[in-house]
Amino acid sequence: MKKNCDLDEKQNNYAWSFDGVPEENSLYFRFGDTRIEIPAMD
Image (cartoon, rainbow, N blue to C red):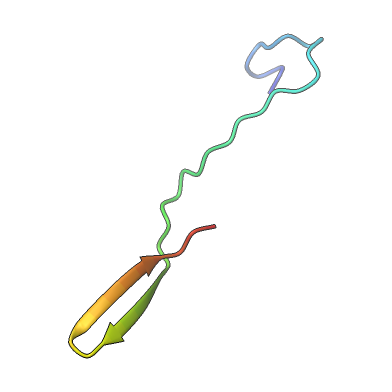
């Protein structure tokens, strides 16, 4: 990253974090005619 982004080589650490993929997993609970969806979280 330091070379590709022209960052200061003398600095110890650079960090980026992102989740570019939306969660697709969910838990479904059904109680009679009612369905509840709870999205999965990492």
